Image (cartoon, one colour):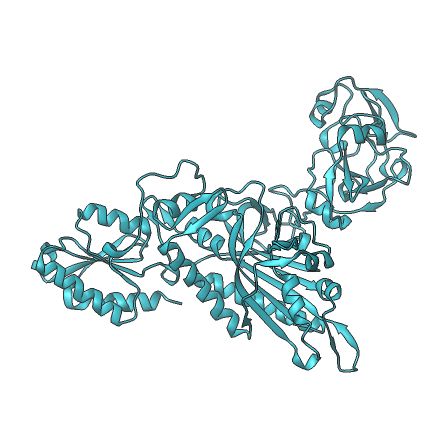
Length: 569
């Protein structure tokens, strides 16, 4: 490709609405353009990178025996209703001219499972199927360029077996393939325990990339390798000191005290770790109390996972008053009827001398013995892990990292196959539901994550495997015959060697050419100029590390080809 024929609309300034590094650079370097909020066009350079990422993914999946499909974007709503996912709020819905209800696919579990009903016998298993397809998700707050969008290409793959051992094997194969994929893409990922969320399933692992532009917090232990999403993470707490116990809870006035900190500061109050925080939620239409230590925060996803809720929200003030007789800030679970469901975090289990709301505005109880005074329906981990707490595996200090998720793998089990009637005959001639796994990689998000990790003050630094072009031949004075001919010879030699090469033949100043090449992030630049040619040399510049060297004109293409082939993995 020649630059004069290419569409590479580089910009001098960052887009005004961009915060993430990848958003700024992918727009400035001419890789992507926003159409409306959360919907982007990939320009030629961006599409080249995306295709290379897809090629790596396809290569590694085919190595584990996966077969590629192409499924529709529009799905009949009834197939989603069969699996209980007909009312997902992030889905885009439409009707055709005949009035049929359709949904734009957020994901394709239902459709792949529908197709898997053509499998008849265990002898046809295992099967692994995948596709690259556009997904649609009505994000409430799209942001950060390609990191959080409403329309995106995802590679989703699905495994089908009839034994749990078969699922385990397929899951492990995908795990190892994902490690290789991200290594080849130049991404150092952390594999973490995660919540399966609305997808369902027994085991879930996310592949995370550390970046300040991410929205997910990951907890890691450097000593033993423990890693988990904040929605799943646990830790070991140091024992908290209890206040002296009492024979029964004692009500005391706390006028105007409606927060944990206010009770800490209140004379006769209690430290935060000596308080019980009471939160009221409505779960699938029924009220529920969540109890935590006063200095701990609730992770809503943990509450969703613990309850299996399909609809969960904080209760409104009027609902709370009807249920407990007080406004938020004076709430507690002392003496409540067993009919009210109470989930409590283990950090308050066995605690005595605690302080909590008395369900009367302006009053609290002190001397609360949790085992004696609170009827807990279920003890479940609800709290958010904090930086510096102890690792649950080895007691070393945990570290919080800000990350972005680039892939997620699930053990789905039989949730979808049972709902849609996907069964096979086993060795004994018995109909058994297919046991499934689901494995996703967001292509655009992976592209953005690569930029998040590979950039400097001058622009993007693409790893060779995913670079839109591996080499740019920059002709300083394209109107001079010697420069033009030398540049063309090097360009043609590189093309013949199978190198992705861009010839910068524009009639603009060398400073513009150099800045554009660095902004775009092409790994190698060969500069052909009259001064070097006078000495029989050209300059070779490597974007990573900004290293330069002069090489003989007739040796440059061969040397750079060797470098590129060595960098490819």
